[in-house]
Length: 372
Figure 1: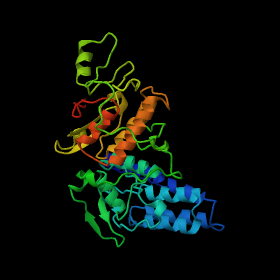
Figure 2: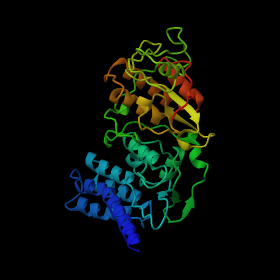
Figure 3: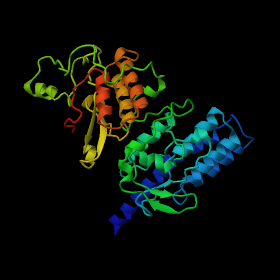
């Protein structure tokens, strides 16, 4: 009996701790000074708390975010506070439900600057790492959301472990196949200068954000032959052991301890910036294909994704953070060019990974390596 009481108290403490984290947008709302009369920001900050409670309708915080803009204006601090509420994690009560609710009203939020942002999800929910990665990404570069609800955006980007909730309060289950159809996902609409600067990667946030760099001129056509006749890349490793040679010959799963160059003559530091497209990654069904960084050093803690733009952004960040490429060097520039071309193409299949690898000078590298 005593152990049961201790366990229940521990769970309650965790729930309370999570609620403290979920109230982060409240302080930002109260701190708005760019608009609104005396006491308006404080009143809105207090009222916003009810919209992130477990018992609230998941659409409430979207309508309340619209109210923040209506009453406090469109100053940078007001917009940031309202966007923070849209992205805020709604209080989750594990005693009442096993998965959260997400608003399915395609008209909300009504304010243009608040659309295309997805919410954070409690870490106790399966798949929340992907959802939280998408939320961070959407604060910097909102997804195109014409005719789409917040629930639709999450489903289109591969997260469906929630219950859809309409403004009326009615709920509906998400189709089990909905989260596997990444092809319907709209590409990011562009960087948002007033949004948070937090990283969109699920691993410890990289300090560099590729989205902060304006897209460079379009690269050569994806099918154009690389400047040299090299088809496969051989990674030179000093005093390589037989095991290291075997790993390098796969062209896929190991990073080099020395500078890695592509057939374009560009150095990417310690990493080979190639992308895989294969089924069964991260415990998914073998028939569900996702994108992933091949090089283990560059990959770090990054999870696979249905959206290739998530992977390309993470890879460009990691070149600076862990691979040893200096910001502004040819390696980063080439990665940003390939990223812009990938976003413009809008494809989400094997050709997406192949074209990425071709553009960076790694034509012929397997896009279905053994990734552990």
